Image 1 (tube, one colour):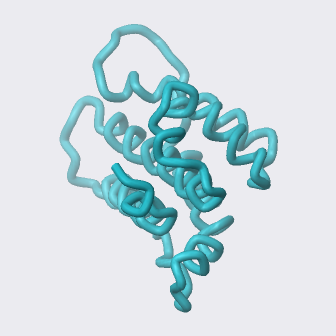
Image 2 (image 1 turned 135 degrees about the vertical axis):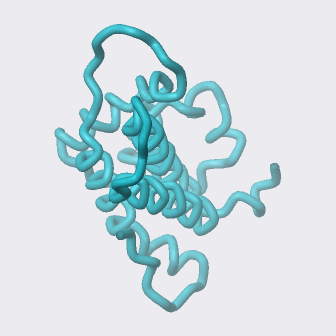
Amino acid sequence: MSEDRVTPLGLFHYAHSYAESASALRRSNSINATHADSPIRFLYTHAIELYLKSYLRLSEVTVNELRGRDLGHNMTALRKRAQSFGLNLNLQQEEHIDHLNDAILDRYIETGIRTVLQLETLYELCLFLHEEFGSLIYRDGKLTRSPIKLN
């Protein structure tokens, strides 16, 4: 993929789409499934990854770096890199993002007990990231309107 085709704004909007879809599923009362929360957690986690990547693209991190071994899907590495460019997170937010490295387990069934973040916590992380730098992303994309709201 070329650098000009993966923009901060595009990643931000994609993150919003995943977060909004997760929120719609979370609000739904019609899901009749044994593991209904797993797809929702996965969508929120992917949204958080995309939000962080949109911030990093805004900070001129290359697409190759984002797709590379060091950052890729490593939530802790993405978080630390975003913080090195000025993203302000509190300790609890850092811990929650770091915990998301286990999110792959939401894609595949594995028996046993594990700790997962509550859906509300994931939503709040998405909302924080969306609001924290959405205006910067829009300004960089030469948009004068406010960022789309996350419901």
